[in-house]
Image (cartoon, rainbow, N blue to C red):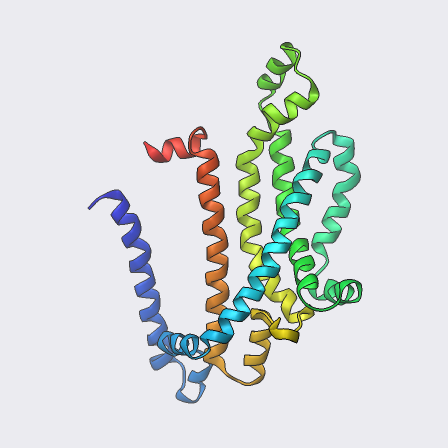
Length: 264
């Protein structure tokens, strides 16, 4: 068996074992009158098919909010990381306030966002921005300030300006750190959008997302549909991560050591 085939077979086998354990837990461990608390995988898939139109619309609304917040976080965090990398004094002055924003829970920020921009897509995007912003700016800043000192001295010896050092040395060297932040933010963005939708979303004009759908299904005690919503949310997060991994491979595989070692 080839190495690549084994890499594909291993997660498939693990998934099969997890599903088997799920069924065993449902039928042999959980009391019959409580089995509704853990629907079987086939019941969840049936709920996906039964609510396909509604879940698709909700997933699209969540994806819109997640993409808007994620895209804004990428732009703002990269610009701020350039500023933070300029000097240690700037980092010391701004970092505590960045931490303060990140440590404020979304349910606390949600009413503020609703007051500022109203319930719905704008609030969801703004709250998604908050949750995706911090890992991006921290990782990118770390990459910008972690360039090999020998290379910095080499650039200086050739008379490179500070701007040339930044955009021809530090920014390319920071790309692996930047993509690490992107992967983290891509995982958090759909989650943030769902939580934001629960706290600041709106169903006006079919604008409700997956968070709103989860609230509705939970209030109606439709537990298979609630698990189906969680499944769709997971798939949305997986899609975000796949796109980032493709972009990372495209940007780094020609020169970065991690990809060179993998290809050997």
